[in-house]
Each structure stands twice: as structure tokens, then as C-alpha cells.
Length: 88
Image (cartoon, rainbow, N blue to C red; front, side):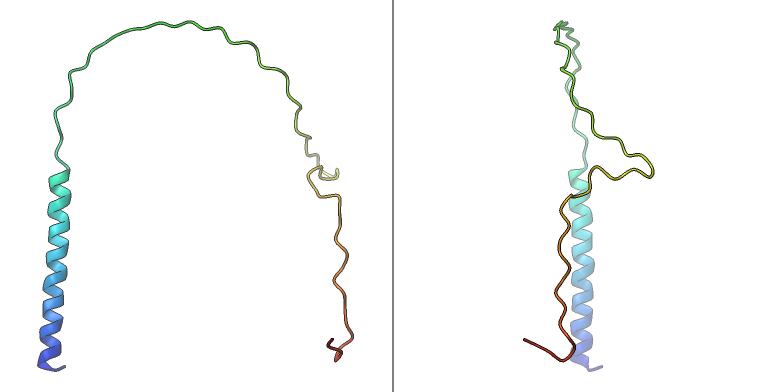
């Protein structure tokens, strides 16, 4: 390793350590707790009536051995085959 490469390596190492130290200091300075506002208690009671929900259709149930109701009904045709050696 040449002297110039060693110097460059040391400078980059010092710069990296400095960057890590700066990030740590910045993180520590942002982590200060602020005073919380005094808690006040106010109670408000609101009563609302909601209509009962309308019945919805239920999803089909999956049963062992039964066909899957979520399967597609269209089956794609098989890919065309060519005889070996024929390229068109």
C-alpha cells in the first residue's frame, strides 16, 4: 500500500467516524422530552341509534371434495405444438 493510499484510507475512516458521531449527537438532541400539557377531563355523552344492517349474501363455503366455487369457468386452449426442427 502506498503512502497516498494509506492517507486516503485514514481520512475516509476519520470522516466516517465523524459522520456516525454527528448522527448520534443529532439523534440525542432530538430525543428530549417536552413538558406535557396539563390533562383536563371533559365528559360528553352522545347517544345515537343505528339501524340494523341489511342482510348480505354469504360467500360460498368451501367443502372438502366439492368443486371450488372460486375457480374460473373458462379453460384456456393448450399451447400450439410444432414438430421438432420446424420453425416458422
